[in-house]
Image (cartoon, rainbow over all chains, first blue to last red; front, side, top):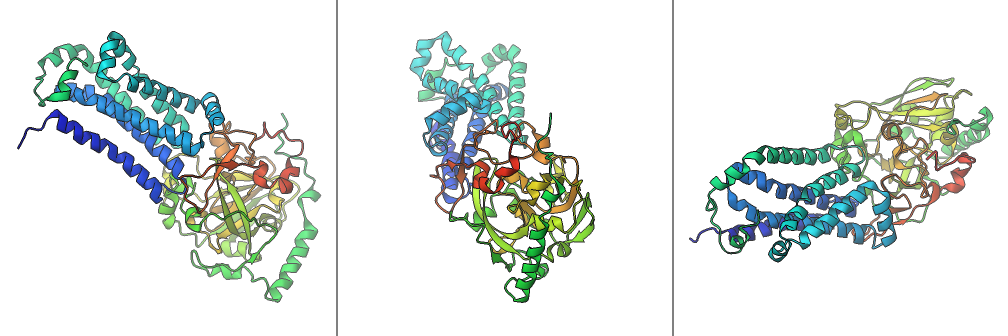
Length: 219
Length: 317
């Protein structure tokens, strides 16, 4: 039996993260999303975007809690999947919902605050995705980190986008908001000791091979 | 500020008396001839039983009907949950029999009426209406019912009756969605008296020839096709005539988003989405289903526009 390497973990996660997408489209085509599958698709893909966003944001606090340093090497995968779900969410809106009606798209972005907010989050996310390569990380240096801190703003905008889009039942948006607040609190509480803590974490808590090794200086 | 909902209606305008009597006479004769089966047969019907009715060709459309399965599985009925499929899933415990409807307020005849009392004198007819939800989707539904005006006139509303208010059942044991205060329960809706007297306003007891499934508002509901769907209050347990404008649920919940009139109007957007177009829920594969234009008063302007003459419908949406 060979060792389970980071590469294996990543490959498995890569497939797992794609399954909700396939499942959602399967439901839409098979009638499992009700009589308005376009709206259903938008809703489901939007929810998955938020879930992946929160998952991405939970990497650092969980890493600090568990001491599994190598978790950081999974963060880009989750981050890019967040954008993948956001991209298909937006595409369903533009292609299927609006039928490529650019005028209405412009009107929506300007006149409907929840779309303004959602679109802003999407634009920011696109920037993060575009600068997610090792090459960009190297070229941008310090600016890379400050740009990628906008993930917090994106999360906030995304949750507000969901909250404002709901008619009366705000339970679900509030759950996402609660998780987001929890993650932020964890982060703040961990902050002062983080330097000391990370130095104590064994880099071999999870065997790291190949691709992951090159990202050693990402955090 | 003058509220146009309180219209200057003369009592004589409210009462289409001659029409009322001639219709009763017509129905009586019709029923004697066996042409129009009386609603009496309804009382014995089981849920989703076949109804006896006559098709009213005056209220028809050649638009494709929404399939029965979609009209009965995609519903907004927050009493059973806020997801569209919640009502179909949870409404089984409603038990719409026995049922009674108190008639209250500014009318000569008031008191508690059983469902059978309410339905007995009315011949059922089928009308095919468009139903436009405020959420920008729409259906085409063949309703079975009788004119609201016929029902209301039986109670002889007085000249003080300027509005008629309806209430939905409040019973969290049978309506589990009411355990959470998503809306202020019970659900209430109302019409101005002249709106209620308009021939389009219908009390429905069935759809697609069968009794109303619980999730569609059994045992009786309101249908006002020129207004957004939320005006069509379901599972009615009281009717009250009043002089003052009664509160209405969605208006109370978000007054800047949902007006008292709630007339379908492509020119007035909901603050969070456009009302210019709608997605018609039909039989086809619905992933590629472009929106169609929404018509003023949902295409019923000819029948109802006169009710709002001189009213700024942008302001009083």
